[in-house]
Length: 632
Image (cartoon, rainbow, N blue to C red; front, top):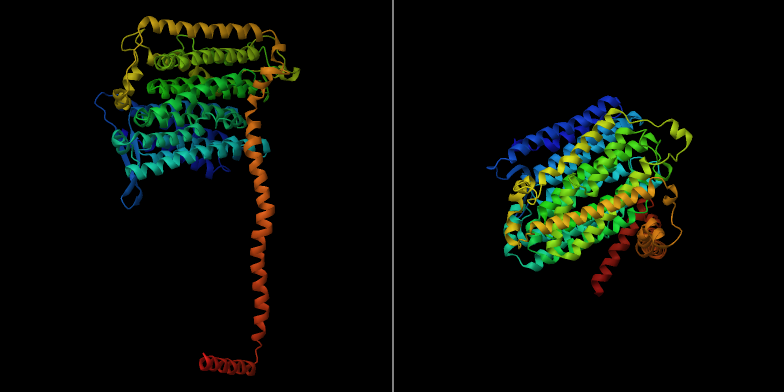
């Protein structure tokens, strides 16, 4: 089945073409069936590939479709690599992606037919690009998918293109990603110069004999790309603004595609990072700093989608922390569980927004529990999962990362546990403000409150089930010997890295203690949030001063970027426009034009049309020629 892996990205691409080219002719029902059906087809094929890969005798398969670049000794094939890591990501992308597509049918139903089809074509292209990214057999094919998801994020964030604010958000995402992508591209060029190849097998085989300095340079450049795509400090500010797009798009970006690209790339390049300890430290520190920084901002946000956006930035920081301490399986595990509960939370938020007639401010909500029973219950399960309460999925993946952090550096663990407590607090602040207490919206909103249609609630229920039980594939040894099925499954991908790094094993008592502390802090955060925000709407009032105001304004990072980067660049560009372009470049270009015009006007008198004049000119020219020859 792995030989047919090309069908997995091909089907969404066909859906993109059909919905895009025939958007003016297709009905909404047919558009939804095509858009969702192609993703379901990809999921079924991915499932068959997964079961093939799961066999003990399986070895990685390279499927070469055609030669992509041949230049001298450099040969780059358009190839796909099927192994444990790529097959797992295929299931996440197509499985969660399919549920988001189905959900979108109802959520976007108010759009007119051609825009509805345009939306689904972009969504299909998004999934195609992400599949290309994780299936690429070398860094160049990965980079093509990498750029594809960047393009699709621009198209979908700015989907409502008549809104200038949304267009600005789309441009911000596109430009900030281009900054990161430059780092990725430079790393690829460096690999070509160093290894003469960009194939994973060739690069990883040559890595152990390469100098640490070179590997450090390459991996740091790759990490620059990851900070852009996966929204880490300093290139994270685009992701909260990406909420301008439709809510299902937010779910797709945050759960199944785009932001997980950086995690996948580093996990795929694990041997390079293991051999470059400085880069690993940088990844861990940036990830940890991003985790607690974004979590602190989420504490004071009142837009339901912005809270979830900063939550994603924070959880991605956790994943990078895991990568930085060498817990590659833990990072991928958290990608998977996060995909379940974050897709659930975003789609749950979309259900709330749908019921509230596009209201997103939690200060105008409250008491929705009795009006939206399915949304309420599934959203609550998602909040418990992200808070890391056992036996929900987030508990297993989060605590695996915290345990690895404790083994590496106790400071990492302390900050990580503090971030976990903050996460539990802001998520249940969001839950309590939205679903508990009294309704704070308008009477008109209250009159129209209703549960979402089944095409929206069924994906919520399925994702809630996954958020509850998804962590059981990674039960730690402290609970069950050989219970970590995911670690066993991914072992071949990380085998070389595991041989090189020093193994740290915590005794069971220490593990129990660490788990107990993290769960206790999360529980305290949950009860503190519920007691404060369920019946006290005044607690949501914006802070007038102090740290509260600082957090509400996102530490003024956007304003800082505006002051030290954007404003100077704009000022310099205006200077260039006024001084250099108009006074120098325009003067030179226009001067040449005027000179040519003047010369042509003078020369045209020679072309009088009189034969006598031409004969006279010829005679004079001959005489001048002879005089020059005679005297010189």
